[in-house]
Length: 311
Ligand SMILES: CC(=O)CC(=O)SCCNC(=O)CCNC(=O)[C@H](O)C(C)(C)COP(=O)(O)OP(=O)(O)OC[C@H]1O[C@@H](n2cnc3c(N)ncnc32)[C@H](O)[C@@H]1OP(=O)(O)O
Ligand SMILES: NC(=O)C1=CN([C@@H]2O[C@H](COP(=O)(O)OP(=O)(O)OC[C@H]3O[C@@H](n4cnc5c(N)ncnc54)[C@H](O)[C@@H]3O)[C@@H](O)[C@H]2O)C=CC1
Image 1 (spheres, rainbow, N blue to C red):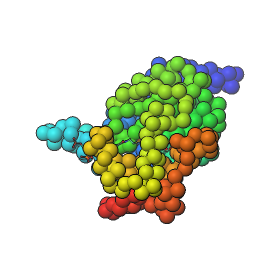
Image 2 (image 1 turned 180 degrees about the vertical axis):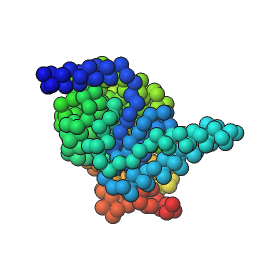
Image 3 (image 1 turned 90 degrees about the vertical axis):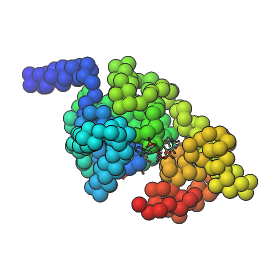
Image 4 (image 1 turned 60 degrees about the vertical axis):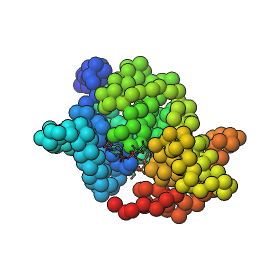
């Protein structure tokens, strides 16, 4: 009887949740993207827990969010300091820190994963969370390039699994790519589309295909830029200047590679080269591999294609 009662209450709670909007968000990964995703959810009025392996990383994320929120507050309430301060305090009050993903997801409506771009690590994380997260909780990956279907393989909740691909810097870039797999339910899709708009993003939808829309076009362009450099056709600085002044890009490809992170860029192209060895667009790039091997990951380590002032 107790079991039936428990099952009934889970069913009721999950069906009741279907009508509820997403209020409790857990972001796993407190790096470049995780901190941005946590920020836009917190500033939009949601309760957010940001999780990473290491307490120092989540505290660093909290500081980065605070700094970024000050820029947003200044823009939103330029001549009303009291309102700007209230916005900042309220947003930060909705942000919790954790290094325990299993515990953090206990009350979640949505889990957004933004950890390292490695399929096995993402699968292991979701496999573990699938056993402890509430039945109604939606799982989403912010992966740049991995198949959402393969990440979802690790769980029993493919109907509640999507890709939610944000862009860097998350507080500024307006786009959110929403990727559904064949098993994604209409209710899940509709709820994450509404959620994406609630955090201020314009959503587009794409099939579960390598790189979805933007990265499928952007990453080969960035790799081709490095090949142009390797041939000695032009310097990195001139290639960046050319693309900013000639194509109106806000950043050139080398500035962007340093901004995105050379490690993430390498993981993306490596994954595609492995799956599609015959596609010349996905050929790995020796200079990128060398810089990553030397620990030069871009802005986040102070040097990539360019050197940066340590903050
Ligand atoms: C790899 C993947 O999977 C997918 C990806 O993300 S691919 C990468 C996609 N992103 C891009 O292509 C970024 C291209 N670059 C840009 O858009 C711009 O260079 C940039 C927004 C990053 C910086 O813009 P900028 O004009 O050079 O510098 P800056 O003046 O500091 O910022 C411009 C505005 O954005 C705001 N801003 C910039 N970074 C911010 C942040 N982290 N938080 C909050 N606000 C920020 C600033 O406050 C500023 O606003 P105001 O001018 O109104 O004060
Ligand atoms: N860097 C970018 O411009 C963009 C990256 N992405 C994607 O977002 C994801 C994260 O990328 P970044 O934020 O750039 O990486 P990052 O390296 O800045 O952050 C990744 C974080 O994940 C943490 N982490 C790793 N394994 C973990 C685990 N098992 N549990 C909890 N935390 C763990 C790391 O400690 C690190 O803090 C990747 O899948 C990437 O492809 C998506 C859009 C843009």
